[in-house]
Length: 131
Image 1: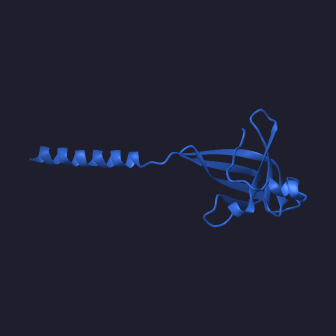
Image 2 (image 1 turned 30 degrees about the horizontal axis):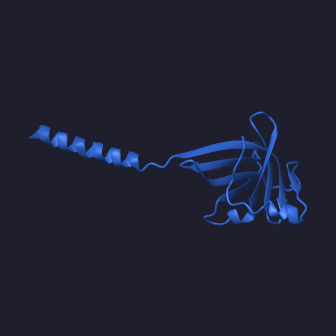
Image 3 (image 1 turned 120 degrees about the vertical axis):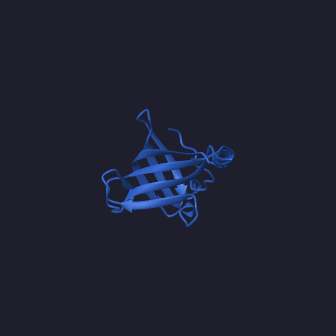
């Protein structure tokens, strides 16, 4: 009788474990230092250091930085700032978190001029970054 109860409990635990494993979502994050960030009325233009030490760039619209959106900005004065972390969920871009200096006079900040060509760069649906 006791062996039957123990086996039943073990089978129940195994079933719960297997069902929990099948519902796991695969998240992947990559954190990269920012070389320079330019503020614009429509968003941020980010220059970052690639793995081969060359510069890459991407644009992130301000519309992503709303509650429940695709981005978050964390302002501060940590010595590790500025950098960003990109999160992928099941292999697809999920959201980006920018860690930026709160003092806009910091050397890493710049202003981007407006114009039709520059404004068009912020019409972004997805984030494709070359590392």
